[in-house]
Structures are given as structure tokens and as C-alpha cells.
Length: 358
Ligand SMILES: Cc1ncc(COP(=O)(O)O)c(C=O)c1O
Image (cartoon, rainbow, N blue to C red):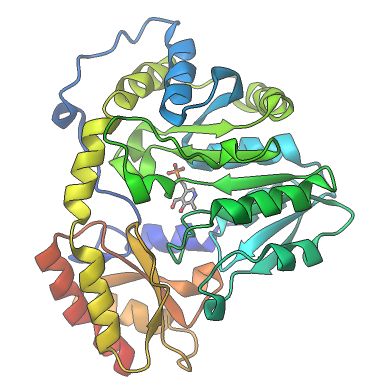
């Protein structure tokens, strides 16, 4: 059975409801009229194939490696359904994004974790993952950029994970929904999918986080033939196919990724530096120092679980950050500079500062 995802329940209670939102983890939504695209033909069944091709073009892979999905969320479900059977085991990073665990548990899979440690800069340590592998481990799961720290997993680390997995006939799943942030593709092609790094790497992603297109739910699984086949079987068995309008609008908006990359860059400019200076000004605070992206993880060592203080700041000062509690890092919070412009972000940080001194 699928247990409630505590993080999403909490996010729905608070996100978008405060004047200073330093919690939301995606570029603000763009409206259809802002996109300025011609209306697609929503009756053309050819849109299903067109969407698959457009996703392949965007990711610079072949259409045979693509399974379209409703956002990264459904892509995770389909990839898990393709890689795992009840009683199998999955190894996932901690701190981590809770749905990666809940979706696996719901499929009857045993979830075990490996640490991405603060004192190692939250890198993925393949040797630690190798030591945690068991006879029934069928998949190793990482996010890159890492949610909640924003730290990238290097290509070499993914290749090492792939060879650890390969020795046991397992797969590596890379959730790369935040990956394009290091080089937002102004020509509309994301060239560095982890899918290309080794045959047993499966990648999941969407247009949600980088481009403001989350409401279109354009997501995908990229994988080798056997995974594509099983993910398609899982799709057919669980929802048949997505609405035709998903495919029509999905292929249309994929054509807007270039200009939306420029928009995202302009929205992010200069804000990571503001965050860095602010963290440096807080006595005793540490942060994950991500190279790019739109959030980092700030830690207040020795403060215990920050959840109630975070909620109090939201109520009293109207400023919200993502509680680390829901990511397995209770002394930390995810600080995002996605939503507010630079001046509002700086003001939000000023209002947030008492959190560090309570
Ligand atoms: C790591 C990660 N994967 C997947 C998702 C869900 O993405 P989507 O909106 O495309 O379903 C999120 C959303 O916060 C996320 O942080």
C-alpha cells in the first residue's frame, strides 16, 4: 500500500500561501498565452508519436529509449514498476525526496538508504553504495541535482554506481529533474542526460522544475529496451494512455524550451550569491554550497528538529523554507531562490534570520 507522503502534505499546507516563498523548488509557472505558441491540433492522434520524438530530441537520445509520463512523479512510478518486483530491495540516498521511498514501498519493495554526508559535501560515495548492496538489490536511486542540497552527482560517480549495479544485474535510476540547471539549454536540447553514461542507467525527468511548465505534466522515462518495454506494460495496465491533449500540448511546449531557458536564467541571476552571503553571516550555520540550481540545504548544527520553528516563522513573518525534517535532515532547511525576485528574496532572508538565533 502507498503511505501518505508527509512532505507533500506539508507542502500543500504551506507552499504558495506566504508572501516570502523561499521553499518552492521550481521556476515560476509560465502561462499558455505568455508562451505565444500556435494552438496545437488536439484531435490529431499523431501527437502521441510526436511527443515521444520531441522528448527524444530534447534529451538527445533515440525515441526507442523514451516512455512519456505524467511528470517525473509518474515516471518514477513507471521506472520502479519496470525495474522492481515485490520483495526486491531498492537503495536510495538520504537525505532524500520522500516520494522516491513511498512509491517503492507501495510496490511492495523494501527500501534501504545510503548516506550523502554533509562532511563529504553531499557527494555520492560509490564505495558506500557498493557496501550496502544486498542479494535482492535491484536498483540504486540518486537525484542530480540532489534534492534537497542541490549538489550534482558527477558522471564518474554515476558510471561507478552503474558498474556496482551491473555486477548484480541491477539498474541505476537517476532523477535528473533539476539537472539542466548547470547549462540551461537555450537551443532546446539537454545533451547531458545520465541515460547516456551506461547501458543500465535509467533516467527520469520532466519540464517541471527548470522551465515553469509543471502544469503540463510533460515527463518521461529514458531507459534501455527491456525497461521501456516493461514501463509501457505498466502504463497500459494502470492508465491505458495519457489524454491526447497531454501529447498535443506536450510536444508544443517542448518547442519552447529554448526561450524558457533564457527566462529561467534571468529569473535566477545573482540570487545564489545572495543566499551564500546570507548563510555566511549566520553564526554557526553551514550550507551545501551547490554550484548551480535554485536551492541549497542550510544546517544549524545542534538545534534539533527545526520544523516547529520553521512553521512559526511562516506564521509570524510570512517567510517559508522547506523543512529538512521531511528529507531526513531535521536540523536543516532547504532554501530556494526560485520564486522571489532578488529584492524580495533578500527581504525574505532578513525575516528568516531569527530562525538561526532561537
Ligand atoms: C527530485 C524530484 N523528483 C520529482 C519531482 C516531481 O516532479 P514532477 O512535477 O515533474 O512530477 C520533484 C518535485 O519536487 C522532485 O524534487
